[in-house]
Image (cartoon, rainbow, N blue to C red; front, side, top):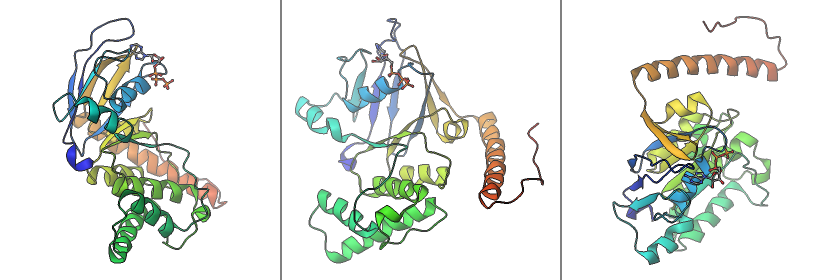
Length: 264
Ligand SMILES: Nc1ncnc2c1ncn2[C@@H]1O[C@H](COP(=O)(O)OP(=O)(O)OP(=O)(O)O)[C@@H](O)[C@H]1O
């Protein structure tokens, strides 16, 4: 399905108070968008509108175009549930299988015509993408239940990027533990997903190419990163790296005195 979706367009509806939204936002594969706003501001509604390919028939009155057109009704309902892959914070495996068996099962659910060599290549590709994201390498013959939290998240993200046929990936904050968040977003974007990420984390929001600002159920603004924000991102990433280094020392049971860092 990814091949058949070249764009998603959000046409504005109205906020909770009926204020019209002045929005015509076209997203293409490889776009990374943050969705920001306080609790109750309508983040989930916006994402649900995309998932249902709303045709001015949801509370927000928004219209979603696929490839610049309203979808034919049979496609709307066939696509509906498959449009969005969700990556949530709680990613733990409870299946009694190895990493390679899990990837094979997922691949075969999608397409059961894989030759053994093709499958091996696919497993290698998912595992190597996952290993870009985590400090502790994953091996194909590791049991899923033996993966750490960071390794599980990395495998889920790589599996979604490489194997899921959903063109849109919705991310609920990526926890800053055991995983390289920048690489995680890169893996999805490089695999031509349209990534929408609801977040309150300034680093994640600034890693996005643009951000949708929600207020009272309406899209109040769509901001694009500028030079000032790129500089701020660099500063925040330095501070983040310093905190991570201290956290690592804490984990190793070391004392936490100097060399300190200052945020002026
Ligand atoms: N444009 C809108 N018109 C009418 N109702 C709306 C609109 N946007 C959101 N709502 C409704 O407002 C309520 C809160 O919205 P929603 O759950 O999407 O907020 P949220 O930002 O995801 O909140 P949280 O951060 O707490 O999860 C929901 O009942 C939703 O259906």
